[in-house]
Each structure stands twice: as structure tokens, then as C-alpha cells.
Image 1 (cartoon, helix red, strand yellow):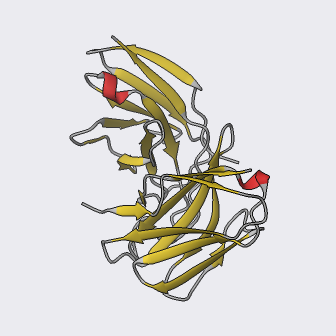
Image 2 (cartoon, rainbow over the protein chains, first blue to last red; image 1 turned 45 degrees about the vertical axis):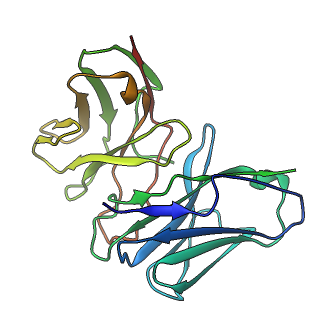
Length: 114
Length: 112
């Protein structure tokens, strides 16, 4: 089974802090994604990566950056956390050539910025 | 905006079939319909997908209308563990890393 893990289930940070969210997948998937989920808004794509060191902006990249130094790991970085970044963050992955809808998700990180 | 339309909530008695509808009237001819579910405080979990024909796996059945403008996910014998939000999506069929848009889904409550 595909396993996507995220470094923390719950995280509390202060405004202005730099925040790192880590995601690791163990199925040698080329594509990795970061989403945020907010009540009433569904899932929104922040960034995705289709290869090591490659990244593409999603719908809401402002305030975020990403890093993919190794194939299995995709990091989401909040350079200076703000209260409006309080959200559930979900990482997902799939393989090159997979149909776009077949993504495997991690358990999520619930981030609170105070 | 999500391209699919689902009722916001449904109830189902435990042991009965849960039938969850989805409208995807703008779906293209080569786009698949996918269903996911999300149990509270967990990540979405893939359930099933289909193009034209009805599909069945160990989790559920998927019925797609002939015009492909709507589909129904069927959980044949709902259990309390099936209480979750169910999402129907029809992502663009142009690459594995295309954006997948999840709407707000249907919150299914299975009642004892």
C-alpha cells in the first residue's frame, strides 16, 4: 500500500515564525502535492512538484514556498506564518502517467497560527 | 470552482445501502469520475473511479449514467465507519500532475 506520511498531525506556531511541513511518500512517486483545506472551501492546491527540484504553483501559492531535494520528500514552507494560514494541510502523491484523479493523501497537519 | 455538484448532507441507516449522487454535467468525453471519502481529521481516501461503465470494487459500486452527466456511489451495506464526507471529482485528463479540485462534498451520516 502507498504510504504518505506527514511530520506532524498538530502544530501550533506564532505569527511571524518560519514553519516547515514535511511530507514523505514511500512508493517512488514522481508527483507530489500540497493542499490546504478550510471549512466551506474544499481542498485548494498550493504547489505541486513533478520531479526533484521542480515545482509548479497551484491556485494559492502566496505566502508559501516548497522544496523537493529528494524524490520521496516534499516540504512546504511558510516563510512568515500568519493567522490566515491556520488550516489543515494535506500532502498527496501519485506516479507519472497516473490519471490526475488518483492521488494518495497523507493524514494531514492541522496548523494553528496564533 | 468545483465542476461537480453534490448534496451537502445525507443520512443512511446502518446496514442499508447508501446512494450518493453527483452531477458532473460539464464532464468531457475522456474525463474520469473519481470518488474519495474523508473521515474526520484524516486525509481523503480514494474509493473508486470510472469512465463510462459501471464499476465495482471491495469498497463500493459506481453507476454512471449513459450521458455521463451524473453518477451514483453506492455503499451496499453502510456501517458506522462509513460516516465521512464523500467527494466526487472529474479532474482534467491531461497528466498525472494536473490540478484536482475537490468541492465541499456530501457529509454522510450513518445512523445506528
